[in-house]
Structure formats: structure tokens, C-alpha cells
Image (cartoon, rainbow, N blue to C red; front, side):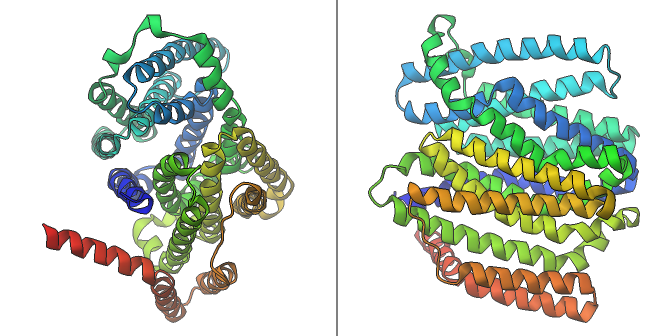
Length: 469
């Protein structure tokens, strides 16, 4: 199977798994905004924020290392078992040390839902690790099924705990932990990991190689946390938890694009690693870059054009303040698409230090803008700082990667993208129904024209498949 078809196949399988989880999360917004006060939602979002911080620190980004090394070990059973054994050896030590330290610290510092947060962190570590192992094995179907199980568990437990048990914030945290536990349990059994763990295969030399790859990704992970979600901490400290609730809701819509980016990123990371040394690499990478960026620009402006119609339906009126901050956050997520694309090329070349350094730069920019301007322009500081930091990261990586891979974009792509975003954002804030309808029509036409060749080839591929069946 040629590279592009294999990449498309992997993306589609992962898409159906991940999209179920993300759509379920999105359609739970009316439930969350109806039953939770802005302050309650802000607290839960802040807890989720810190869980995402703890995980890469605890694991030292081992899950990324195990994924990359298992790809190289495909078809070599002994090497695979060695990697899995070393992985679990380190996981056991890491989680034990985290547990001891966590309960010592929280015995002096009072935090809400102390025990539930510990459980949530542990199961997040396990599920994230097992998901990467599944990807390393190339078992994308099991990966997708685990994601579907996560989504179904989330929606069922949220409805039961929030609507019927009245648990609200506590119910959301329990649901998160339960969903990750189901994911981890399914993959542990399905991947037959128990049979691949052997104490005698623990190799400290191999561990050193794995950590040499993963440790530079730790500051990268922390920096991504700063870029992505430190805004919530600053907002909570300066403006209060209720403002954090508003900002969290405004982020939920761009998160749909981020989630789709994540889906693409999962399949792209495998393709980039497999074909980084192929003779037609530059042509293949350029083809994927153009296809993906045109799709995500269309998704971004499409979301902005749709928001005037969707937001009032999905979100309770007490969260109306969140509406204003969506466009800059959507623009940031589109920059993030390119950032993630370039990131996987660095990682495929095992240049994890470059990934970390550019992300740290973005984190510093994000914090500086937030701290300087949040008292003056409120939540706009958080949204704008995210956009600017993402742009700087994109611009730097775009220039830096030219030294290693020659990626060519279609002529005029960036100018056309800039113009359509300015058009969509202007009518978004003008907020007139007739203008909003015009904006939506223009954006749909733009999306169709720019992605015509991709849509046509996708349609023909599906048609051929159906005919052959």
C-alpha cells in the first residue's frame, strides 16, 4: 500500500475512535452548563489542567519513547517484550514515588477531591501509556475501540452521577477517572501485556536509551501545558474561578479542532517515523502538509462562521460571556495544526531537544503576555497570548525545519488563509443575522473550492470501494 493510502487508512481508523469521545464530550456541554455553576465548572477545569501537568512529569514522557521504540521493533518479539518489561518496571517505580510524594504534600496542603485526583492521575498515566503501546504495535483498531469505550463510559457516568446523583463537580471527576480506567483495562487485556512482562528482561542500558529520547520531551510537555492551559491558573488567581469557567467553555469549541489535530497527529507520527528516510520524503511530506492545512483552515473559519447559530443552542445563557473569546482561540488551534505537523518530523528524526526548545519559547511568550495584560483586558489577554505564542512557535519551526526537510506549500496559501480569517472574524463580531448567513455561505464556498481535489479523490476512493464490494 502506498504511503498516502496507508496514512489515510490509519487516520480514518483512529478518527472513528477518537471522534466518538470528542463528540460525546462536546454534546455534554448543555448538561455541564445547565447543572454546574460557572465557578464549579472552573474548578473542575482547573483540576483537569493540573492532571495534564502531572502526567508527563510522572512518566518522564516514557509513553512517547515506548511508541517510537516499538515501531522500530515491529516483528521482533523478543525486542518487543524487552521494551514492554522495561516500560512497566519504570511505570511501577514512577507511580509509587508519585503516590508517596502526593499524599505527603496534600497532607499539608488542603485541596478539594484529594483522593479522586490521585486516582485520576494514576489511571491517566496507565491509559496514556497503553494507548501509545497499541499505536506502536500498529493496532489502531484496538486503539479506536478503547477510545469509544472511554467516550461511552464518560457519557453514561456523567448522566448518572450529575443528573441522578446530584454529584456535579465530584461526578465529573469520577467520570474522568472511570473512563480512563476502562480504557486502560481494555488495552491491558486486548494487547496481552501481562504475558509480555518479564522481570529478567529489564535492561538499564535500554532504559538509558529510552530516556535519552523521552527526557527532552518533559520540558516540552510542561511547556505545552503552560502554552495550552496555564491561562486557567492565571485567570483563577487574578480574576477568579467563575471567569475560568467562562474561559473553559470558550475553549471547548476550538478543542474540537484540537482533537481532530490530535487524531491526525497520531497517524502522522507513525507515517513520519516510517518514511523519514524515504527518497520521496519531501514530496510526500509536502503533499500531506498542503492537504491537512487546507482542511484545518476551512474547519477553523467554518467554526467561526457557525458559532453565532450554534452557541445559543449549546450553551446555557449564564455562560454567554464565553462567546467573545472563541475566534482568537480558533485561530490558535489552526497554528497548532502546523506546529504538531512539524513536531512529528522532529521526533521522527529523533530531534526531541528541538521540539522542547521551541515549545519553551512559546511558553515564555504566553506567560509574559498573560501576566502583563490580564489586569487590563481580562480574558482577552489569555486568548490573545495563546494565539501569539502559537504563531511564534509555528513561524520558528517553519523556518528551522527547512534545514532538514523541504516542505513546499501551494503558492498564495498563507495569504488566502489570512484573508478568509479576517473576513470570518469581522462578521463574527459584527453579529448581525443577515451578515452571519452571508459569512457562512462565503466560508462554505471557500472551503469547497480549496479542498475540491481532496474531496473529489476521497469520493472516488469510497465509490470504488463500494463498487468492489
